[in-house]
Length: 308
Image (cartoon, rainbow, N blue to C red; front, side, top):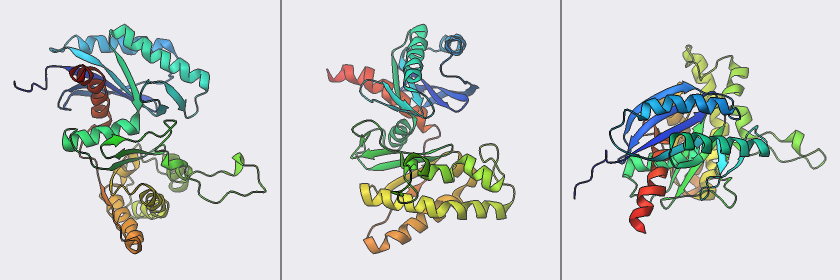
């Protein structure tokens, strides 16, 4: 028997901001087709009709059957049921509406639908790309852009937490709470100080559009980010004892290897007294979120059938 990676495909969609990444993946995690299209307003059903019409034309060109559609969203998702639990700036009722709209899209395409958190799927995809899914190591996939999230792989298994809320490293508080102040107004989360908007407000540059042209400005942004990022990673490492980290997202992409190298050095300097160290790398996979979404499809369909 010879393994044929093109025997089956998965359609993968990764939504972020006002756009969607579209990929067709094979069984080996290869992305055969990739493109980005505008997509906004998750609650408007007509947007899903438009997307379905376009995808139907794309799928008509495939030579092998599709096993399903894997959807990556910046939301908390129950990994067993695919139910959207909560999402930033989306109410509970709207979460249900968004979930129904994605089921509606899948029905129009005639495909099984599997939904996952985008950072968790990126962690899954990066691990698969590195080890073809066989490695049982610990890995933390960090992504820094509009927010700061972490996908956590412990002994080869994703850690999603009791309520599927794990990995919200950006929600770490930046100071002790004031017992004399109302709780909500005085909370300052880590990601509020280091995300794209915070950098834009402080330095006047939007890193999602282009990297800083001035080398001195780039150094200033990195120096601004390092203390908060290193502190968060130190706390994460002391809590989870992971060792292997991947740094991804729009901000690291814009700032390049300097941020990653200096961050790794600073965290390891902080860990010396604890007799620990970390390894911080860039993603090896070009599209880890799409690979992870495809892996989710194959696990829920083909692999489940083989193990029954």
